[in-house]
Length: 195
Image (tube, rainbow, N blue to C red; front, side, top):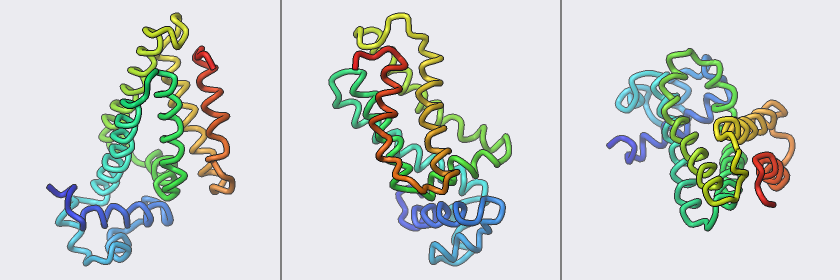
């Protein structure tokens, strides 16, 4: 499987950097190959096109984040702890990989509609996790029983998305980690949590 191949991951790592630094439209396959330390033709052994690289990059990196979140929240004792962990992990993922933050928050949004549609299934999986945590919280009495899960989910995801986008647009000049506790507090209070 190509995902387990070191060269495949090497190319994706290089693509994140090249796309973040040059923009998707100016990120030639040759630049990605040079950054990855491979021949141009090697790229096409793993990817059909530059668009395929961008889709794979999103599926892999955001997919890994989702898997990590699922693992961590499985070990939490209640839905509030799960939501707090999700918020922290989401923000830390992008702080730890600022190039990925640029790609997901800026470059993907400038891509064509078909490309965005292809990555939407990854986002749907993430949204489903948020929904599960919210429903569990309502059921357990941790969150307000009248909570509208659809609106709460949009608020949670929208807040995280906007916070990371704002950080990227401000050229990552401040330490986003210092805001995590405040963001967690606002989200929990906004959905009627107990803390």
